[in-house]
Image 1 (cartoon, rainbow, N blue to C red):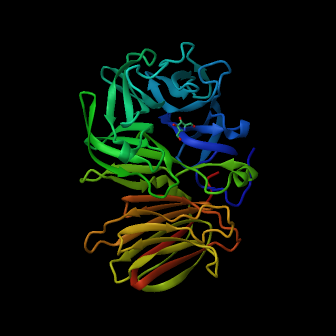
Image 2: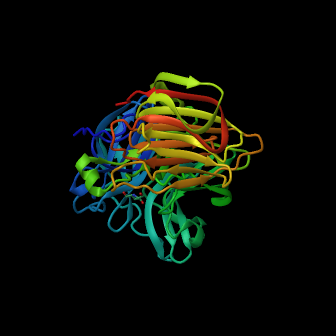
Image 3: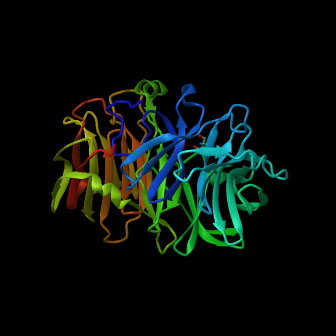
Length: 455
Ligand code: DQQ
């Protein structure tokens, strides 16, 4: 079923209808990008399958048949939960969590990735290590080293903190537990780490995890199968990006997908016939200070249509631009100035009754997404979300914003990401305005592009 709904994004990745959550097993395979995802096509969207799609360019996708479905009576009868895809010497393989209880399972694919056979010996890991009292045991992340396969399983040690458990295997089938890769502090990063993802970046290694809150990263050194974190951060401060998963493409880019859940009622989601969308593909790089940098994959820019833009001028108050759209890429650079707050409003009705503001506050050093007036519909989320931004002396503020109907993704100075969801009700909530208060803000340049649909 393909659904129509004015809130449904049209240049972001989503299934034809029904429910999407975590990205699973992204892989570059035979000159195509493949993306699997947690899919809830039936049973009130609760029972999880693996949906599947492919693309030649990361932007325009083709839906493919469901890759994995629960097998009645099997270890995944209660759902095929998150995992990863690997190339086993030319044979595609998926590793995933079957529930309940949480066990790790394996499936092998045909060369075109269209047919998947579950390994008859499933589960390949039947239980967590007996010596640990764990808070969960799921979401395998697998890679190969010179001496065999390694797997991390998202977990946590009760009363201590979240962790990722490290295993080793010669063949993806027989697994030996080694040790927790590293253990977090309960008070800081929770008691359970979902969806660990581990990969080299620059001359370091990065561990991503989702602790039932904003997704986090650790950057550090991986040696002798131990990981020593040196720096940490939050991948997205907007409140609507979770369970991110990365892959390496043929050009060596490390590309991240994240699940953006909905910000409206369950009833509204079911009435619309769909829920959940992937964030745009983000390319990760490492800065010299050990923090992550983010850029949208350049392929997304191939969707650019009509352009408007302008040069230097001062903004004081609300300055509407001559742009009307709910499908935009927006770039704005503010020079350091006297304004206490500077930013922009999107999905704005002409009278401002509906609008979402994206604002940098120089006094607090924060970028906020303000949704108090995002929608006249009462049953939508309206909390303000914010992330920290410390500008260096003389550093300009650059907002790079993607608006696609109900999803807004904000990249700030390449080092802060915020994803949010909004559901304006009015057909004319399509305006864009620059704004400043507490003084004048000097705009160096603004650009908008109408974005074409990718489906
Ligand atoms: N979603 C999956 C789990 C994972 C969670 C189930 C994270 O495997 O831990 O749909 O969103």
